[in-house]
Image (cartoon, rainbow, N blue to C red; front, top):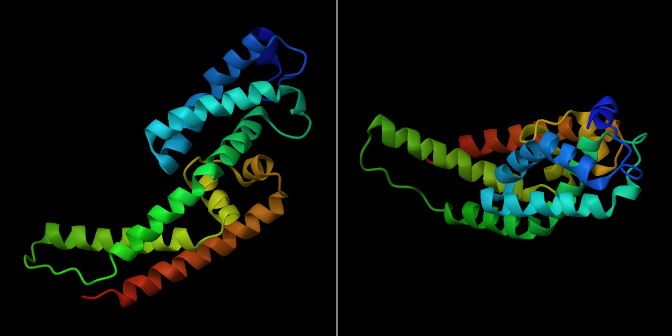
Length: 190
């Protein structure tokens, strides 16, 4: 284990004992990856995707190039690709949530708690609708940054795109989402 720890976040996966190195990788990164995935697809699916992520990584360990990416970003890339299998279902759910809220919400009780819940529900519908409108790659960039807490360089490694692409997408996405959410808030019935 000390040899792996000495190599830091770029271990040589092709030549080391798979049991030892993957035990270390799992201990180091499984919790972080699970937290990211659970935020996207819930804890049950996240558990399955984490297991599948490490299984795919084990099978593809010889393709990992420590000069190109850290083990963390490589694992997030695998997890994101697996997550894409669930994107259609996720988008359908977001669109249904957005559509289900299409009518006006009647509020008989003007209690502050009820008003806050209605406002929160309206913001949730607007955000769900905005996320559903994003392309797959834009959604991945946004959620890897905001939910997984990856830095733009790590997102770039995970998705196999240049860091400058990630930074420009993030800038564009933040402005687009802010505009959509502002517009939605202004158009919301009062």
